[in-house]
Length: 95
Ligand SMILES: [Zn+2]
Ligand SMILES: [Zn+2]
Image (tube, rainbow, N blue to C red):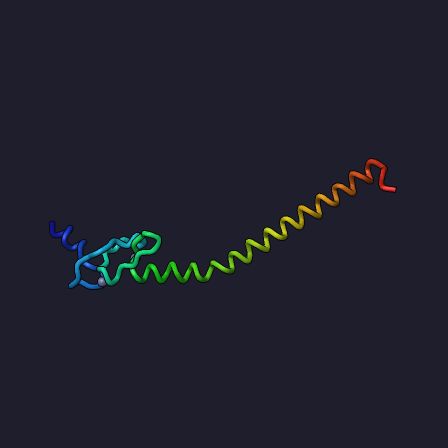
């Protein structure tokens, strides 16, 4: 009983009642500390952390993925073109 009651208190504000459970650090937080994002509860520090990581990796990752995609399709195109030339040369119909 005492444990259940203790778990119902905000991890950052001992005088406040717990409102939500952070899905990241599993701490009980009060209404003011809790933030809901995509329907999942987070405490403020955890949300700031995920937000910072997402903001840092988001655009850069998209650029890298786009460049890799472009390079891959270009390489595939060049390979196909070269294979076609080779095939024509091998068949003796180039000249
Ligand atoms: Zn948390
Ligand atoms: Zn709090």
